[in-house]
Length: 291
Length: 255
Ligand SMILES: Nc1ncnc2c1ncn2[C@@H]1O[C@H](COP(=O)(O)OP(=O)(O)OP(=O)(O)O)[C@@H](O)[C@H]1O
Ligand SMILES: [Mg+2]
Image (cartoon, rainbow over all chains, first blue to last red; front, side):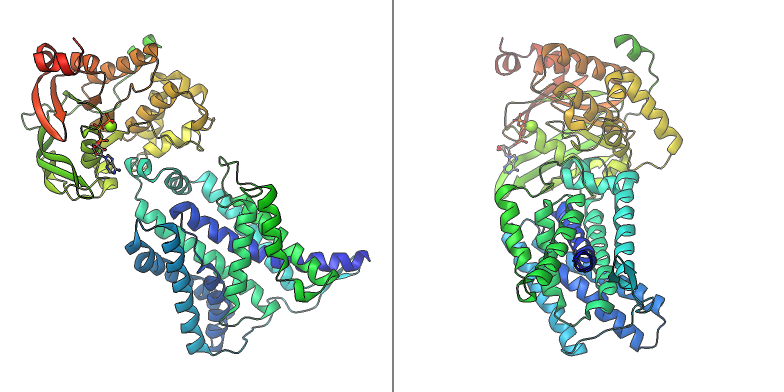
């Protein structure tokens, strides 16, 4: 009984950590620009797909990973420059449609380039599971959870301990006052898109050995990340992390105890329940503490 | 507090006295969509001078300051700062040149601490030592800010937020300080305190462009003043002249 519950929790926290990274991606861009970037899932897809591609091209794993983070970051910058910036001043719905359009383009390009089949690469530290309380924990899960933890900590330090991070926060609070303080708000936007894309790509890379990847994984991962961000209270960094873990755990428990046929529906049920009782999400009201 | 202020050293090197104005605006226009908010505005701000700009609600005072700071586009005319054409320069680069603004409505970064607000005011500067010194000067000038250094700026009272907004702009080591209605919405005692601070800055030979609805107080301390109506400069003269001007007395001083 307990070992089974533990088993579900392990897989829930693992996938939840990826959702948390996706949710942080939404949060970063939302705070800097008030744009809800529905292309966030494609950054996750690009991370996994590009790692597979670079490994097949003969690059060693570390180089493949660095490139699979850097390329999506550049894609994020281009997305801001070519699609978001020209639409400056457009209403929220138009901006959302633009990001959905961008996600279709990215998905289409990868589909034509890499085909429709699944892609995968081996886990970083083998597949010998660690047995805890009768439940098996894959080493790759530890990579996912550990790396996500490090990223969350790094982002926290960046936003709470560096002037550059605080300049980004200031820009999200009041762009005009930020400009008057000499902050280049254009630069803030670009950094936010690049950071958000990189964080999403890292999640995609870490998850690929466990769930495999393909040109269209970004749809579901992106949507779940969005659910996590909203459940946590859009704009709140710690909310994104909590929301991601919650969505992952609920999904795993649903799959385990009810049926995996319902696992994708559970997060969307969650969003209705949470927003009904807490319209601003779990951490949405406290605006003083972000990421 | 007044005593503390008297011992404060200047936060900046005074502008070298020179006949050429520090800021010179010629034929400036600005629009919100099709609506003109500024029309053919010309004015100049001499070095080490305090220039007051008075005008009724919606006259275009804020728009003028925003255009000078570069957060609002000039649709015609020319802005020169220290002889350099800055009409098309990006806002953050103007701050680097030394044009710092205290915006209307204070606009402090509410969730960030008082100290973070002040440090962000110095965002463009790299001289760590001088920044630390200036921080100390701000705390000497406004002791309440030191007391509240770690509090979120949003928890300060209106008057304290105004002091923070002024101190944040000063942290940018301005050569030209733009003040947009610093006394707005404050109790009389605080208004006096803010004007004392402005007078003190003026004594330290800071160059200031002051927008005020409190025309009497502004004209009384101004070297030179402009009256703006419907986006146009309609009167100018020394502060004293405008204080005695019939039209100004009727429209802005309620005499
Ligand atoms: N964002 C905006 N969009 C459209 N029109 C604007 C905007 N801001 C100001 N205006 C208009 O431009 C004109 C000048 O406004 P501005 O804020 O510069 O006046 P002001 O002199 O600062 O007034 P106040 O004393 O009320 O601060 C007004 O008619 C105002 O309605
Ligand atoms: Mg105004």
